[in-house]
Amino acid sequence: MERGKKLLVAAVLLLVIAGTAVFLGKKFGTGGPKRPDWILEEPLEKIDNTTMEIIMLPRRKWENLGQQYEMYKNPHTGKYAMVPVMVCGSCGEKIPSVPQPKLKPGEGLGEYRGRWIESMQNYKCPKCGKSAYTSLPPSSQTLFKPETK
Image 1 (cartoon, rainbow, N blue to C red):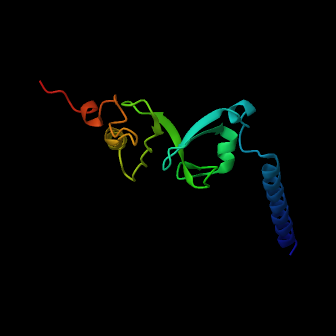
Image 2 (cartoon, rainbow, N blue to C red; image 1 turned 135 degrees about the vertical axis):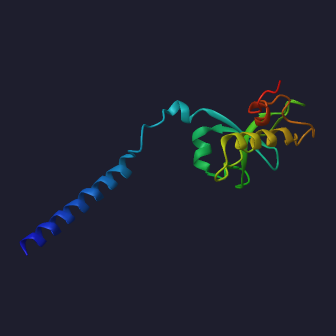
Image 3 (spheres, rainbow, N blue to C red; image 1 turned 180 degrees about the vertical axis):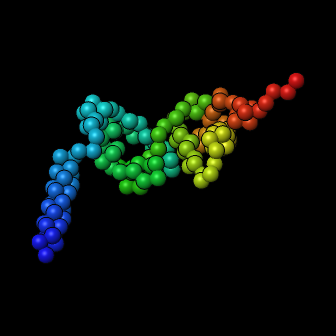
């Protein structure tokens, strides 16, 4: 009976310690180093991928607005449509960047890179209709193709 009481006391003590650690961790934000304010105040330019509206806000405000599926919320419409800006290689206009494809289960990095390069090659500028990329890295087929003599 004495042993059972000791185990119960030890279990309760462990729960109290674990609860305290979780509480203090949440209260004081112990999840790694805090980013400096100058990084959070850095202006970031995003473009609405449906209306082509360009908005520049500090990083902190973009993060506070929220992100879903790699798109930030447009502060004017409330929809998740804001993506990073790129410059079209054909016309020089600011346009939405090509979304990075997701790595498929079991896909090798060469296949993934090839798929990403293909999506860039096929990406047409929504403003001029021409290829948005005028120079691309070599495709994975040419990178990994053995030389023939």
